[in-house]
Length: 293
Image 1 (cartoon, rainbow, N blue to C red):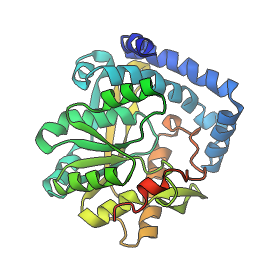
Image 2 (image 1 turned 90 degrees about the horizontal axis):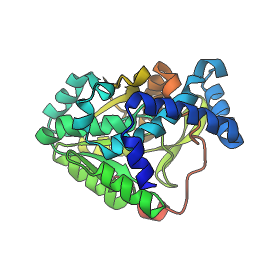
Image 3 (image 1 turned 45 degrees about the horizontal axis):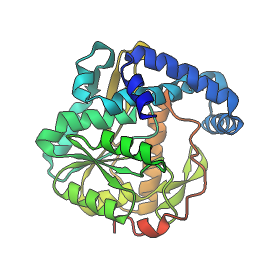
Image 4 (image 1 turned 60 degrees about the vertical axis):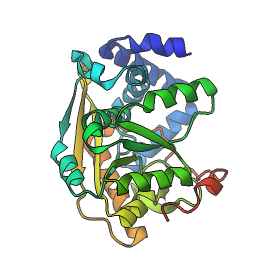
């Protein structure tokens, strides 16, 4: 499988995205579970199928671009016309670092969140330290090794999804560094609250709000927009519409509202097939209990 990944990493981005689009539709047609979840989640957000059907191909493009992102340095990607990236809102990152209290970046399962992490590490890592993200190792050994090697690169660091990882994130923030989270990812039992997401209760992580309250770090939101025809990416960065509340439940609701706004701005690049409303897993609760406390 690693050989297959290497082969895909040599494809020009436009071709990888083309293959990925076809694979996305193939999975949609062959998997009743995925198709049902995609249709249900997008309908919950108020969309008709015709309005978001582009997200089917987009999900395949996300998978197909991973070999290139994981097995090439961002510097090399940036040097190729088919994989350029540009920032919009970069000044918000610079202003957040200037406070000296660290940066908490939140992005949903929207666009290329892998690209935005690698680009952040490349452009800000040398001056401000690593961009640290939570990482749950893959169950298969070959995949775990591949992903670990791809994400642990200059300017980018990964920490485990347990209490040890949370402590490392707190340490990074207190050094004035940045951390990244996907707040629409269902956390383990005991690490979240049931809060409305597009009008339906979803188990939502409290970690981002706790980290913000404990460290005083600046919270930013955004996403990596995937451009058509393999032209690269636009990395959008925004400030919060308002500061997170000191009340934990209210702060979590605010985060969901921020993620909804981002998704609504680019619905054809959201992973509508993700199990956002599933029950939290219980087997990992022992390792993660306590959050940022």
